[in-house]
Amino acid sequence: MTRVDALKAVITSLEDELAALKRFDIGALAAATAEKEGRIGALSARSADPLSPEERMLAEQAKALNETARVYVNLMSANVRGRLEQLTGQKPVAYSPVRAVA
Image (cartoon, rainbow, N blue to C red; front, side, top):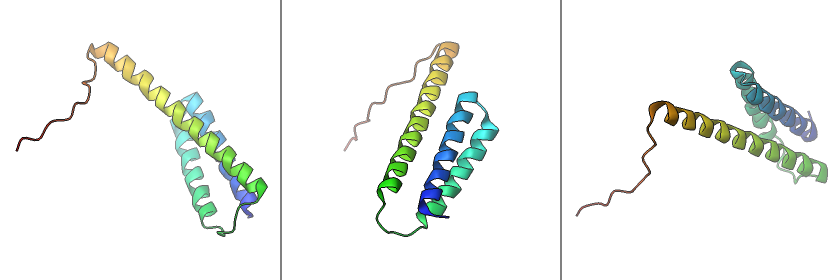
């Protein structure tokens, strides 16, 4: 498998991961994430040669998809947190560092 093929496979895994997130399909999400991790591992084992323009474009596309998935997960988490706050009537305590007493 070439590095271009490996990058395309990573992109496919990331697209599968996003689709599973949007469907709230935990089984598909776990499978897509495991597949993505495996493909990333295989890709990192590739040659350390500089990226070609095509490889760089594919790597940037993969990076953008991964960032989209991260944002999506954060938004879902914030939504759940808000719902839990409504249910419990409690807001989270804001962080405030404790001063050390000497």
